Image (tube, rainbow, N blue to C red):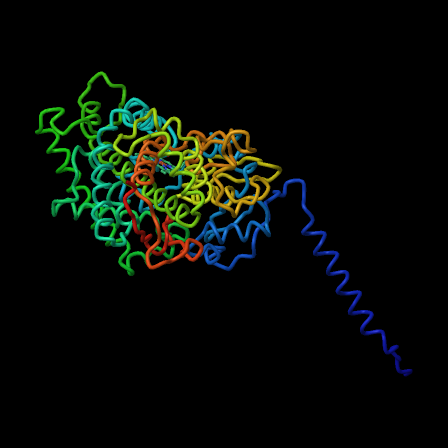
Length: 509
Ligand code: HEM
């Protein structure tokens, strides 16, 4: 039989043909069909973890880096759960304005349920009638402009004590830990507004402050069991669940004690405060708050502490950090404040603050550059929806990166520069505000779920800053220059300076 002779190129040719056919078949089967979803770009994910490993300890920075490659709408997966990341003003507007109602729900994780009375607070309550009622209590009863005005006396007294502490340090020529002092100032102020008096002096109060720190840590931790349920045993083994049980129980004991004390004290005995206001609503048979119970009172009080203390003190910390790094900005601010107030003996009034355009610009710039909550509290999609041409399915978690949006060169000139002038009259960003209508600047979020504490927060920040730049001249200790100041950040929902801010004050006589 005649032997078949193969041409030397036959095998390579057949192999190439085979691979090419395979390529065409694969292409054909992967061709987007009419029903296939159009998904935003995604970084490659790992089995089981998805993209959890890419979030890191400073998610706002890591997600910004990923977004530079994958775009302002990017799809990640935490375990199997889809997570949409928004990193531009346009994409944030789509979520918090155009489709706000679809993204008005929050993530329900075990820590929220356990520590916040089954999500009976405002910040984590599912979107619906109960949330609407609690939010209206916050907006109309606790944090209205009128109420913020009525807390002015507390702001004045606490700031006066704060100034006195600074004076003591300045007389001794010692550096002070401003990070710690801002935190104590804010907690004392909120304790008085919310609970009627300060707790920092008593043993019980000190324990409460430690519990609040534990609470913030537990609420800020990414618990693997929430995204990969079959791994939830890890939380039992590593002590997370046990700590949660302890903190929930001890906080409840403390708040029960506070409520009991207020019920036994004649009204007004503690000055105007949130507990009395909430108890009044609780006792009012005519109030239209059907599901408002004792747990609601405790959950709302916790919201005030979780949402209101760290955020304000972080904001003060970063603003002073930037003022110390930028002496010309500090100088300009001091000149404005001192000119408007006149002699150093005068107290600062709301009329004075109203005229301080540069102070307001400094605060805006600080909130752009260092939003205290860089990633806005996550929302969840209620139903399937199409946004900017992409399909987003029900149950997708949505995270808006306010930090990346505040530094987006598409929206801001030289975004890496701290430059309050950008918000002054006749400048490009003059009309931009942080109240939730300009999506380029959203440190307080926006839409239905937007922050109800803006007036309270801004009133405190303006008053404290104006006072301390008016009464003192500031510098860094040990001849450190502003540009050498360490500005690295610590992990957490609220992002502080990693190293506490130390500064030296001298009296402005
Ligand atoms: C500088 C200070 C503050 C900052 C930067 C801040 C920021 C935020 C942000 C980003 C949100 C999420 C908004 C969203 O999902 O769109 C939020 C929600 C909230 N904030 Fe603030 N906040 C501050 C002060 C306060 C204060 C002083 C209080 C109360 C005393 C407060 C109470 C709340 C509450 C209750 C929510 C939840 C609203 C809801 O889910 O409907 N915040 N805040």
